Length: 259
Length: 74
Image (cartoon, rainbow over all chains, first blue to last red):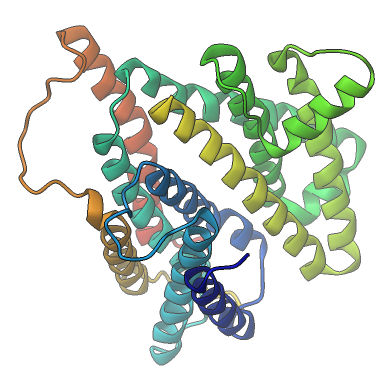
């Protein structure tokens, strides 16, 4: 069931999303610029799980938090585009990245100092993105050898999308194999299910090549779609990277900070 | 739709909007009093490791914001 708070937040997100859709066309940079707000949404969900918003008079669910952050992201972007418009400039994707980075830094700092956890676990926040970036670079290079058009179409957006899928795998492996958690990210859950069908109980670090292959296939498909219709391919890459990165960030941050 | 003029004013306003929204989202968690206590983990090595790790996360974010503010490439 959808509560009234969730309904209000979703309505606000839909309205603001519609406003942005009228003002801006997704470009390769939009895919990257959505990253900071994706991390902010993940941090806000973790903050809600920590009980940060319990003092509010209404019950706040994860869905309401996501919709509220989406409304803030699209609303602030629409506002920035309008301001740029008043000054006679074309809209920029960097406004989306700038608002998101500032919000993520402040919310991330607040969550870090609020949570009580062994401080050495912070190292996973450095290790996981670094490992994901290395895997993404290898995968994108290999994709470039077999399907160069995808690189020409997507450039950094493709590398970033591949990195989000690799982070899904690294975060799941860190959570399950190193920190003793049970939950896994979106792509890892699917790969784990496939391995289970084949009768294998996989060591999650060993699934990482599978993530690279899935990422190469997904980015290749986005590149193929982008060649036919530029906006469609970019929109798929944008939505895919947001969903995968959000799930991986919630998984990693919640497990590292809350155990 | 691309223009090659750098836009530190618009980006600065966007950063300010982001700060306002970040503070709004973090409002229930903000400390009521500020202190410079760095007593994390108990011993010195742990505190240094924590500060180093936070630096490794914070420096790229700072560089990225600077890039957004002053970069001409768009």
